[in-house]
Length: 232
Image (cartoon, rainbow, N blue to C red; front, side, top):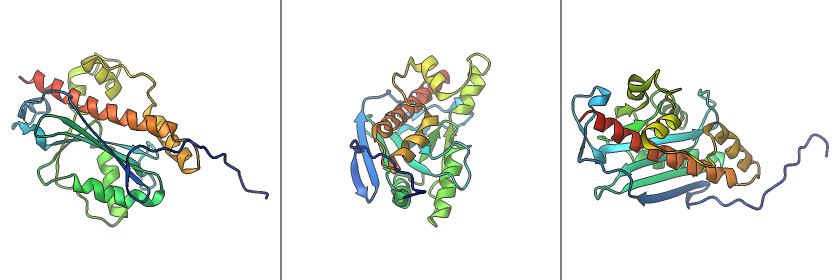
């Protein structure tokens, strides 16, 4: 039939995690990562009061584009926090259909408390405004409104702008934590990985995005602790 593009399907459609709603998968893991003090010194961010470590929620999104705007959506939300026993918990929500976004937004909202302190890297300018827009378009209450937000990009720039080649997270994790990523799928390729999967393509790159997002969350926590030690 003319005018119809045939797309090859892939037999590798495995998405890790548990399907908690149609088209929405939840992955979770706990690990030893960092040794947070009961109270995190936030003088590096020019805050006057320290923050209890179990109030921190590190978060990062993977989206359909880097430009932002109402047409851009988050198709993955990763969040990580320290449990009361000191273990580091990573949770990720991955949508595999367009219609699963509302369930993802509702689930993420359940992870936020009134005293949650959000931790991100450039999230004040990108991730948070994007999610606020998606909650508004979904006609859901905005759970991020009113929460304290600690964006690590700004203190990193104050300390190392002009010293490093740039202040991207991948540079900060290499310089401060000794993390060198291998076989990492760049964030710029995440939109294509998801859209390809929606069109019947392989889930291989989708799983690579999950791994990339996990490392982003671990690096967020590691950079935070490094900055906190500078304040001691």
